[in-house]
Every structure is written in C-alpha cells, then in structure tokens.
Amino acid sequence: MRILRASRRRFMKTSAQVSAAAWLTAASHRRVLGANERVRTGLIGIGLIGKRHLLDFMAQPDVDIAAICETYDPRLEEGVSTSGGKAERFKDFRKMLDRKDIDAVVVSTPDHWHALMSIMACAAGKDVYVEKPLTLFVKEGRWMIKAARHYKRIVQVGTQQRSGSPFQKGLDLIRSGHIGDLRSVRMQSFRNILPGFASAAAEGRLSEEDWKMWLGPAPYVPFDKKRCIYHFRWFWDYSGGQTTNLLAHEIDIVQWVTQQLPQSVAAMGGRYSLTGIGETPDVFEAIFQYKQFLATWSSREIAGRATARFGTEYVGTAGTLVVGRSGLEVFPDKVIPADDQVPQFTRPRARQDGPPVFRTKAVKLESIEQVKDQFQPHVRNFVDCVKSRKQPVSDVESGHHTATACHLANIAMKTGRTIRYDWDREEILGDAVAAKLLVRPYRSPWDRELKAVLPTHS
Image (tube, rainbow, N blue to C red):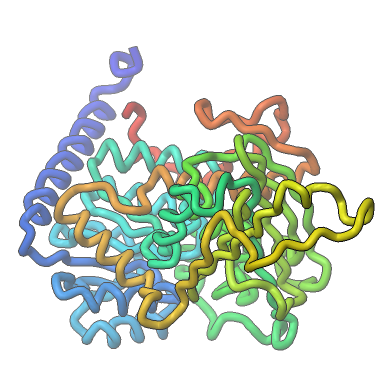
C-alpha cells in the first residue's frame, strides 16, 4: 500500500537508489574476493586513535591508503603526509564514499558520527572498520546491523582486546572452568586528570563550515574549542563519557567470554570536580546483573589508585583471573580441609601439615614475548574478512550488545532507577521515561541522509 501511494517520481528515485546500491555491492565483491588483491582504504578522522589506525593499516602488506577525510586542516595534512603523500584529501566524507575504487573505510570520529557514517559507507558498498563505542544511543545499533546485512558488508568494531593474546588466553581458561564457576567480575578505571585539565583543548579554530560538519547529526551550538579533541567525551551530545569509552572495552570481553547479556543494570555517578567543561560523570559506579554472576564498573577521573590491579578481575569458585593489556595472571584459592570449615573464633585454629592444596593452578602471562599487540592483529582480522567475507572477531552485532550495556548504565544513572532490559525485543521494561532515552533525533539534513540509506526491511 505504501508503494502504491508513492508518487511515480519518488518510486523511480527509490528504484534508482536500490539499483545503484546493488551495483556497488556487487562491484565491491568483485574487487575484494580475490585473495591476492589489495584493499584500498579510506580513513575518516585522524585524531588520537585515527593516527594509530593509519599506521596499523599502512603496516598491512596488502592495504593501500587511498584517501583521508578530516575537518581539521593540520590533522588532515599530517595524515596525508604520514601516508606517503598519495592519499586524496577530503573534508566531506560523502565525497570520499563516492569513490568506487575504495573497498573499505575506517571511522575514527567522535562517537556521534559512528553509526551514520558506517551506515552510509555500507550503502556505498564499502566494508567498515568503526571505532568503539559503536553507537551514541541504543537504537543506532539495530540500524547498523540492518544496514550491514542488507548491503552485505563486513563491519569490524574497534574492541581490539578480542585480538589480544591475554584476553584470548583468558577466554580459554574461564570457559574451560579453570577458575571454577564465574560468580563476580570487577571492572575499573582510575586516574587523575585534574593537573593540566583546564589547558587541554583543541589545537585551533574550525571554520563555520568545518564546525557544522564536525557536529553532523548532533544539535547545533556555536563553535567551542572545549568541545573538541578529547573533550568531546564529556558531552552527552557526542558521547556517553568514559562509560561508553573505557567500559566498552572491558564489558565487551565479559560478554564475549561468557556469552551472556545483563538482565538489569543499576548505576550512580556525578560530575563533582571537572566542572565548567562537560556534563558526563567524573565518578561513576554501576552494577550489572547477569544470569549467573554480577559485574561491577568503577570509574574515577579525579583520583587514581596506585594499588589497583592491572586489569579486570574474574572471580570464580576456584580462584581469580586478572587480565589486562599487559598480561594475565591467575590467583588460585586454597582448598579448605573438611575439618577446617568451622569459623576459627569458635575453636583452636586447625593446621594442616604440608603445602597448601589448590583446586586450580597459578598462571602468569605478562612477558613481552607472550603478550601480542592487539591493534595490528585486529586490523589484520578485518582485512582478511574483507577478502574472505567471513564475519570478523568483533562483528557489528557484538558491538551493538557491548554499546547497549554501556548505554543502559548511563540511562540507569540519569533516571536514578534500576533498568530491566528485554534483549529480544530491545526494550526497557516497565519504565516509559527511560525507554525514551533509547533513541535521539538527528539534526537536519542528516536525518534525511539516514532515511535515504537505512533499509526498512531486512
């Protein structure tokens, strides 16, 4: 009925768009399926992580850097120079997507651009390597999944720890029952950024045209250098704070290892010391209830703790596994003899001759030879999947689940209520106010850009 009511002009335009998208998809498949062919890549955003991605893609022997897109001129020139001076310069990523010879794009922009750029790249027949967090709000994730499936694109999410050797070893140990039954996970990030905080800002001013492009689908505000560079993470219009930034890495591994998703989330937090710049919390605590265990997230931007262990703690009934980018270590729990079960204050302390007895064994993985860099293997996995058309280690659906868990924590903090979530229907249960936070409007004209490429049926 909807097609019948459409005007002939609109119908012809839609048909042309679908035909063009199908042609681009087929052409892209022809280009990348050959195992010996080179993958021509364009990068969008050359900032902190964008520079790292540029170097890592350049390190692949079968990748050519074809184009770089960046709104800030000094960074654009630095990126082109680093790539060898041959990459084409772009200020508008849409023009870069028009190049039919580009096979893949890397999206390393602020968070509020991740979903729309990725969807538009899929529609243009490009495979996508997109930084985490995958989305700015929950509903974007489903849009991205639909686009990737509809346009038959490979999408790798920048949760690089899945490609790191300590995390792969941790997955094997936990799934094999090495620490017994998992019952608790402790995730944390503690640091103090107050020294020098006020001076951290953008390197220079953007023109009005470049500023509007930087804002993209976010609400318009006049240019403010305090919103640029790393500071974008502290504004709800562009990010979910360190909850979607740092927690995304850790909870991604939790859900990858356990193949579970949280049933409910509670959180508290506030911005207490980093005042005058930003809105997101500088102190944050969250609890995630999974079917068989609890997970906690503690984050501080205003005070470090030197005694904190180096990574996330997985606590089981036979021991604790700690894993981070620097390595992995297992701390076994001592087996208590049957006659030692009575609390010590009710009788003389029982002693056992011989060495302690453990249900599991200690494991340590931290030497430089054992810990493999996670960034280049993650890029390599993506390039291989571009050629083979197999799903990457951090596919778009897992990235959606990771980002959603982080968003639910922020929603719980904002509403002051425990959030219960139905993962099948992707709905918050019994809280209409919280449910409204699952989606946000895009600013014109980007709402129309989304509508033009978003599949309505998949």
